[in-house]
Image (cartoon, rainbow, N blue to C red; front, side):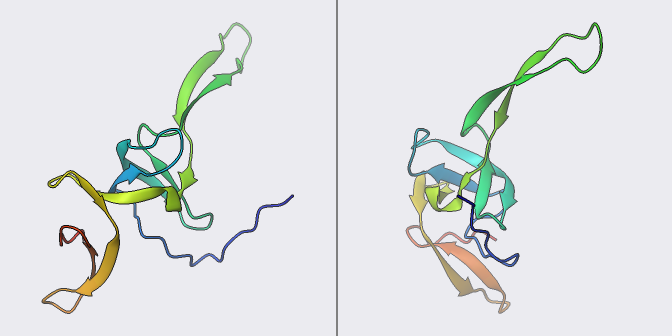
Length: 114
């Protein structure tokens, strides 16, 4: 079974640097910052979420192997933008500010994100 890829211009409601809360899965309720967004796959890497241990073989003679922890991507639909001021997760709406620029706004709090 092959994965179906979206077009390169896929839109996501989250960007790198956003604070999000995980709404489903084993890490439900965790809050973290988006470290990397992968719009082609509609996935995001969130700091401290979906952490897995990876065993790395030694590369050279005499070198010892390592066990490292890495954050793996999760689907963007499993995260919701989070307001650090109000401590609440919310959906977003797109509105225009006074300059006429399109910005993202949290629906619950009215807080403008960018």
